[in-house]
Every structure is written in C-alpha cells, then in structure tokens.
Image (tube, rainbow, N blue to C red):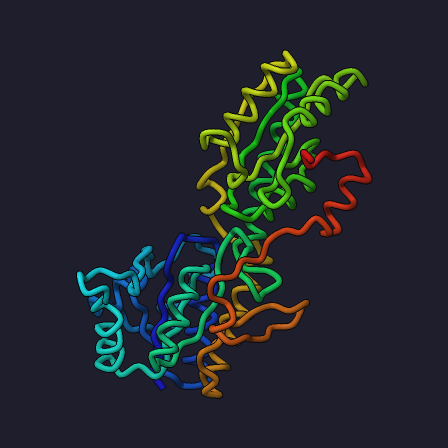
Amino acid sequence: MKIGILSSGGDCPGINATIRGVGKTAIMHYGMEVIGIHSGFVGLLNKDIQAFDERSLSGILNLGGTILGTSREKPFRKLLASGESEKPQLIRQNYEELGLDCLVCIGGNGTQKTAGMLSAMGLNVIGVPKTIDNDIWGTDITFGFDTAVNIATEAIDRLHSTASSHKRVMVVEVMGHHAGWIALYAGMAGGADVILLPELGFDMGKINEVILDRARRGKPYSIVVVAEGIETPDKERPSVYVTRVIEEATGIESRDTVLGYIQRGGNPSPFDRNLATRLGGHATELIANRQFGRMVCMKGNEVESIPLAEVAGKLKLVTPEHDLIIQGKRMGISFGN
C-alpha cells in the first residue's frame, strides 16, 4: 500500500511525533510506501511531496512544529461564481495520480471536517486529531494540549513572584478559542485565584469583589487566568479588558500578560510524544485493516477510532460539572460567575 501524510491548520507540538508514528509503523511493520505532503492541502493541490524512508523519519520525535509545513487551506470553500470549487476534484485527481491507497490528515476541527468530506467523495482517509485547545469532539485528549498546559503553568508560576513583590493583580491570557481547557488546567495547576472560561460567562463585579476580599484578608496580590475566547464589550482583547476594569474598580495596580503563540511552539512534552506515537501507530493499523473514513481517538487510556462523519461541526467544551471546576470552587477559586 502507498499512503500520504499531511498536517493542516495551526502548528502544534507533537505533529512530528505523529508523522514518525504513522510513517515508521507503515514502513517498518507493514512494508508500506509513505510520502509526505507539504503545506497541508496546498501540497496535495500542487503535488508538492517527498518520499519518506526510515532514515528521514528519524530524529524528529522531539521537534516542535511540523517538518511537512502546514497551511489553513480549505479546499471545500466555495470559490467559483457557480458556487462550486474545483479544488476537491483536483485533490481527487492528484490522489489518484500519486497512486495513494490512503491519505492521513493530521489536524484540528477544520482538518477533520475536510477529511470527512474527502471521505464522502470516495477517498480513503484517516484523521488524526491535533490541537492545543483540546476541543475536538470524540477524543478525550489531543496531543499538544499537555505541552501547552505545561508552558502556561510555568508562566503563571513565574508571575506569582512578581505579583507578590509589587502587590499587583496579574492577568494572564491563554489560548483556547471557544474552549477553556487550557485556562482551566493551567489555572488550576498554577494556583490562580480567578479563572475565566468562555463556557461559563463571568461578572466583573463579582471578580472585583474577590480581588478586594483577598486584599482585606491580607492577600494583596491575585492571579487571574483568562481564556482568549471569553466575550467582552466591543470585542476588546480579554486580558486588556479584565485588567483595565479590575484596576479601575479596585484601585489595585494590575498588569496583563498574553502568552499567545509561545504555547504552540517548542518541543512536545513526553506525554504528548507518547500520545502522538500511539495515535499515529493506530492510524496505520486502521489503514492496514482497510478501515477508512475514521479518526483515531483516545477513550480513557485506550486508543480507538470513530467515523469522521460524526466529528464535523462539533466541539468538546468544558462543562460546569467538570471535577476541576467543582473542586476549585470548594477551595475558594472564583470562576467569575
């Protein structure tokens, strides 16, 4: 069999470990031919590829980013006046001309949606979920999330000392789009006093009272962790808005820090390396068994798979019943509501 591998959407620690897991399993165990496709679906449209062998897949386990490059190309986006795009048909044509028996798509929600649509066209496709946001429906966890939480937690740890020294409120904005997983896990691990998630909403009046109450109890500094996806008036940047309102209402000097893309860069954590390796290996096993049109996933500690058709258009979000939220509230941490 001959398989192609591409990575699409945002970069993420663990993609190279996944490419290695898929490719080495295919070559060493199943005797398959493997090609890498550059720049996501752009590379498939242009037939920009490279042949992989066991040697070319060595030394990449610990590397961040993706050796194949990536893009946010969405081939099913309507482009022509007729309302149809030529790109899906060109992908089908190139898939056949390259002699592929399966296409492995490593990516987030948009990539898995595209993979599902290609599968519906009749292409043999396997999806591997990737995002630091941990919001892909159908899998308990995605690689990249643990690394991002580690980075965010270390940043919060470092801000404790400067906040304490200057008796300030430090507002830390972390990534997550519509999902508050990074904010929740890093905020709890970093000992935040207030954690704001898009799923829960928040009341600045209650947050300000928490800050003032801490000051009255002899705790003159506070750490506020904010997910980038929370709603603010006039769509003001969350960290800027929260910092400004806290300082105006409490009179306590406040500063904001935006971690941004630093959460997506650098080497993957050991957990993410192993998770990516397991997911990549299972993807190749599905190909060998000709179980196409599926996305590999984690259920508990087991690697499984679900139909790609079930994934599209869904998000896995934090719920108020999450045990970290319940425990956090019991310990006096505010979630702003």
